[in-house]
Amino acid sequence: MMLELLEHIKVKVDPNKSYADTGEVLIGLGNTQEKNEGIVLQHKTEATRYECLSHYVYEKDFALLNIDSCQTVFVEDFSVDTILSIWIFLHKVSHVPLPNSITNWIAYAKLWEEGDTSNTGKPFHSYGCLQNSLSLHLKDKEPKQKLEESLLFLDLLMKNDINPSNIPDNLQTKQYFYAKQALESEYEKYQNLLLVGEIVILSIPDTNSKRVKVSAIFIETAIVSSIQKVFLRNDENSPTKDGYGFMAVYNVSAKGTGNDIVISVDPLKKIQLKALWEALEQEEEYLWNSKRPHDNPRPLTSYPYHNGPNQPWWDDMGKYTLLAAPKMLGNVYGRRTSWETVKQLIKQLYKKESEL
Image 1 (tube, rainbow, N blue to C red):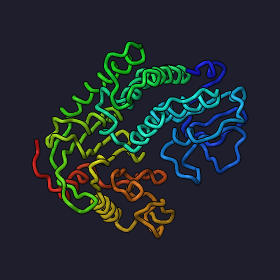
Image 2: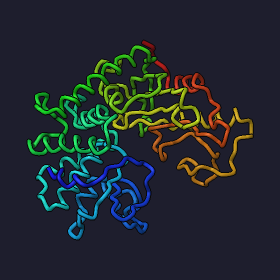
Image 3: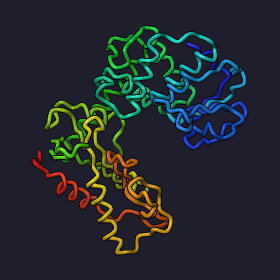
Image 4: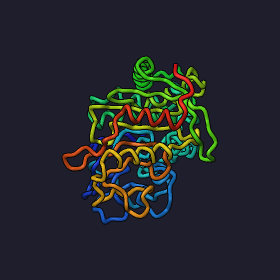
């Protein structure tokens, strides 16, 4: 591993970093279409479509880059795609050949970024889950240590030609031990979520308008971690035996942020919540009694003529697989629909067939 390249480089976490000064490298941040003094590695602002950030870094030419000029690396997080991108970047700038399996890892990163928690492996054998768990274990450590430990773990898997969706459970490394330990802790928390959640079976239309029976859970909690979501979607003990394809979470402490009520479905099940989004928007208009602000509409696919409210329910860019509550309107809450009403609308629309 080219970890020695990081020896004199600072690592900082800053999701809002948008400009690269001289000596700075932005990983998954910034805009490649704007003039930067430093280096911006960001696939989302490229004219060419890339599958994910690691795919972009893999295709990019760094032949003229002097790694000694890189003084500070900025990252948004320590996710699968971020770590893989940095691993590829360090190899390319040091002219170390990449393994033949690298395209498989990039394909894995793409699936993980898309929310595919089925084809990326069972939770305890999934690189995505283990990397997220390792990051969770290291949450109180300095960013540089978190990055180094994550790169060491990935490097071990690469050198042993391990399939990212089938990580063996006998790896003799502290990174794997810490990751598995944190993953086991998340599983315990997940089991507790099931105890306090309301579990039902819903009938939700798919993209072809055909009704599909889906295990659903309503949870009132501060947060559901990304790892717990993987357990939810892969739980063979769910009522339909194929995981919880629907999840509605109410976080009362997050009121006004847009994350106080979040409703999502497993994208692999090809179901969508357009009818629910429409019902929520209709309810908001009714509760606002013609006083809902429309003077500065938030851009939304569902309002193509820019005629929506300032703070609508999020529609997931018209995919309707993730709905989120309106945010604050200055000092006023953008959401007036109560959690109880949200649950009632869901059950009315999607025929609550049974309660467990």
